[in-house]
Each structure stands twice: as structure tokens, then as C-alpha cells.
Amino acid sequence: MFLHTDIQALHPNGFKITAALNISGKDAMIKNEKGIHDGAALQVTDLRTGVLLNLSPNSAVLFLLAKFKADSDALIDDAQAEWLYWEASQFQRATWSFLQGCVANKVDAAATAALLKCLSQLEQQLKLSTFICGHVLEASDVVIYSSLLLLTATPSAAPLLANYSSVQRYIGQLSDIPAIKVAFSLMTFQPSRLLLV
Image (cartoon, rainbow, N blue to C red):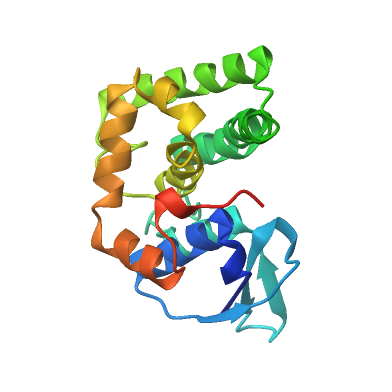
């Protein structure tokens, strides 16, 4: 397997895949490349056909962390699928809209409202359990945590995050996981050094 990402750009999608690699215990060569679509891609070889596949960040995380159940052909349960979809369709969009406003020094009220709505949804879910879908770290946790890291690195977001104690607990808890710490060191950045690309 090869992880293609621009290490110098410190892209959060490169971190996302690196964290999943460490959590899964699988090895991959990290290839430093500029201009990768979505900031990162995981290249794997289909053992049946020999075809090279380039997985997008969330697909790569799911591929690395999914566990087959003996009684099912499904990679993940419905709740896990819903949270992965929510992160890609709502949370990423709200986070990036807010952060683009921060960079331009024009934080839009609608972007802030969309982000607050997403943070409220996360807060409600995290009041119920340790992780997004229960008490075990899953793919949805890695992708949501990676988006949350962008907010922790943005001074304008600090007042927003301060109102969500369960989200703050979650960020701290995942940051303390040894495999996550290793991912930070491999990507040569810490959350406070993330750059917006």
C-alpha cells in the first residue's frame, strides 16, 4: 500500500489516512507528492485482479478499519454509514465554509450557524457514548476527529468549541490514543500547526 500525500502541506486528509493505518496496524509507504486530489489517496492493489485502486480519504479509512462480521456481508452498520455520510456531506462543508471565512477575515453568519448546528449534533451524540457509534473507535471517529482538528487549530473557532464539553472531551480522548500520537509524528505536525490548503 502507498499513501500519496503532500507532507509539507500538512493536509488533514493525509493525517486521516495515517491515523487509520496506525490504528489498524497496517503498513504503507508514504509518498510525498504535491497536487493530490483531496489532499491524499491510499493506493492498494486488488489481490484478485492485480488492479491498482486509489481510495479517497474516507474510503481509505473505512477500508483500513472496517471489520467483517461473520453473519453479514456488510462492512459497517447503518449508524456508522450514516455518520460517515454526515461527515462528508454536512460537517466537512460547514467546517470548510467557516474556515474559509476565518482566512478571509469575513466569518459569515450562515457558515457559523451551519457549523454550530453540526457541533450541536456531535455534542448530543457524544453525550450518549464514548465514541461516535458506541464505545469502540471506528472509521467515523477518525474522519470526524480529523475535521475537528482543523477547528482546534483556528483561534476563531475556540469560542465555538468552548460550548461543547462532550466534543472537547472527545477531542482530548482521541488525541491521547497512542496510534493517533504516532500519526501526528509521522505527518510531522501537531494540531496547532495545521495549515489550510
